[in-house]
Image 1: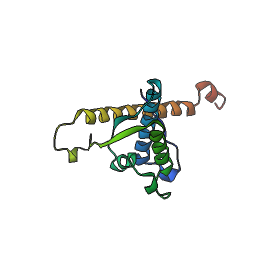
Image 2 (image 1 turned 90 degrees about the horizontal axis):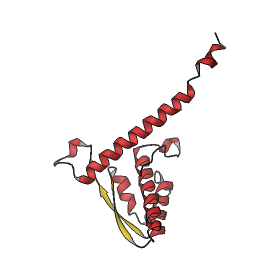
Image 3 (image 1 turned 60 degrees about the horizontal axis):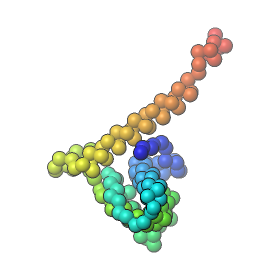
Image 4 (image 1 turned 180 degrees about the vertical axis):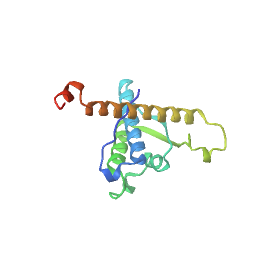
Length: 146
């Protein structure tokens, strides 16, 4: 399962934190669909992320949420999805490519995080190229200006 693209929101709120929250929301929705396909029921799920603040939001208490938080729309949606299917995300912070903080070889989950980061970059570049191709006029369209 893979996905990618822009995480919509206010221009002032577009940052890596929002992107990580968008990824966590996508994972939660995907897990919910899989859970529903297998009859539902309570379960736990390890959810790793390199953005420590995003990881903290996975298990946030709804009563602690402040409207002033950045990306509060994604945080509340994320909590709603986990509540809907009775899943418990086991939040795990990973360092992955943050080499200056590494003190040991990468774990399996950190390797997976690096692969997902690379996949996300490929998807973003592919979409950017597709968008740019749409902006470039065809040679036949340029001929009328010569």
